[in-house]
Amino acid sequence: MPLPFLTADSAFDTSEDDVALPYEDLDQWRRPYRPGPYRVGAAALALLLASFVLLAAMIIAFAGALPGAVSCLAVAALVIGAALRLLRMGTWVSREGVRRVGFFRTATVPWARATAVRTVQQPVRWLGLPRTVQGQALVLVRQGEGEPLTLLTDHNADFLARVEAFDRAADAVEAWSAEYAVSS
Image (cartoon, rainbow, N blue to C red; front, side):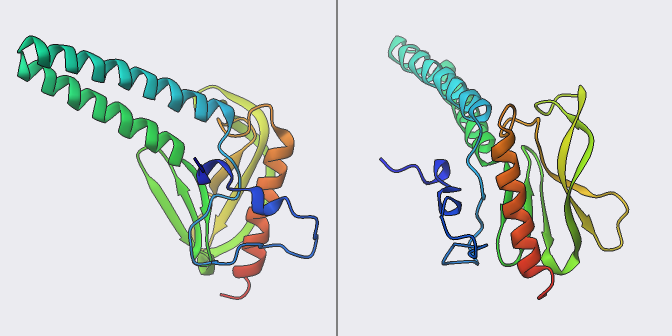
């Protein structure tokens, strides 16, 4: 069964160095990297928990307590939705701009409003937790706003202990920025 969200950066594994944006349909939103093992593992554990909750809902329904079964189904639906949202999180790019998808909030910045996309050394959050460590971050500087938008960090769930993957993803987003921020 093909899993397209796991092969998102396979188009960047080309031997041609002159192709910065190898996608055919540039209007479609894409994540130019694969989700990391920590993100996929957390989603898999959440889906495993949801399967046990669904099994409990079935047992409760066969026992005759329908309100309890409905509440178990609702909890399972919430856990499945959270797992899918966890897999969807990250930075997405298209011809229109760059989109930072978080768990609760999504921010889209058109390329016309982006003044610079660069990699900087700064304190970054470790796996999204409040603890910060020194690391690299890919930031987007927007016109008229002082605080840059952090797109990627080398210590998040996608790139922890995967420095080469962070460098490839940062280069890919910078290539999209170079192609469309200037032409907008």
